[in-house]
Length: 384
Ligand code: NI
Image (cartoon, rainbow, N blue to C red; front, side):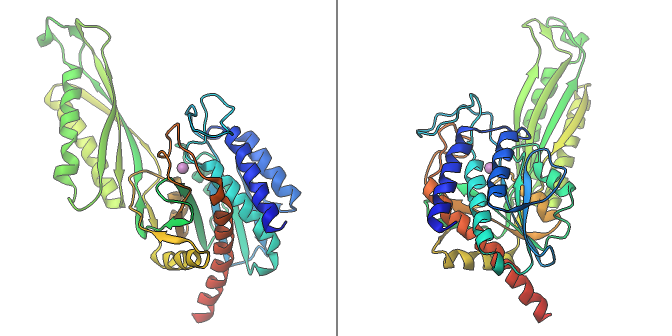
């Protein structure tokens, strides 16, 4: 396929993916469509135990091995975007641009197919399921195909940058995401006799206040950390003090040490507040991805390739949002870039949209990044 054909193809695929969004781990039609497209282009697909998502491979199968990855799932959001190719699945929408990622990386695969003779080593192209919450990256890691990867690159579209701009954040870029679920157990009683019971609402309320002091009193004021209480539920009636009250929330941290500290403090405060009021606290955690930290050396390389592709490098701030790409960095090194898809409403907003003219430049960049990374890895070995 030539440049024009690839451009048209991936733009049409983008419209298709946008109209047919699927939630995390339900990306059956999406996977089928990706597979069909790759097979028609004669691209090799690895035989892996993934129910949704897939991995294609180029090159010899030997080192060096570079991977590029996109995510393919959508969100439980009802679309309100001003586009002609709106979601046809009620209550489901590509509100984070994973349709853009999927089509751009499909384009990268087409370009790699055209350039197979330039691939000195192996390139794996990962279409990852379940990024929005259930940590689908772990499913890919479990297949073992990251174990021998020398470097991995990922991208996210950003509504903060115009088309033609890219953002790079060296070092910690996105947060570790953990969720806590706490049940304060007291003793239910008539509202007129609080002295005969243990008030789980008063206990939970004291916790909500006390937990705010973690970031302000326990963490380095120069570091970015966060604790948010997002769900509170207790009682059914105006004249009954309820036996139990539930609290949920999330913590965000940028380093392993901070993650350990903040988790320990939430736990300690829950237990000590409960004890103060004579109640019990049952604390459970749902750990999400670790913090995502980009490798500085690969950053120099990724920026260089961006300049060669006429991208303008724009300033970009770290975020306390999470990205399960971070799981790959527990196995190997690499870089996660941000690609401008035109100014728009924020990710996950029902009005979020991307400019499809950003597709081909993103595809071409990611393909070239992989090919050039192999050459860089060859040079490094030669120098050692
Ligand atoms: Ni996303």
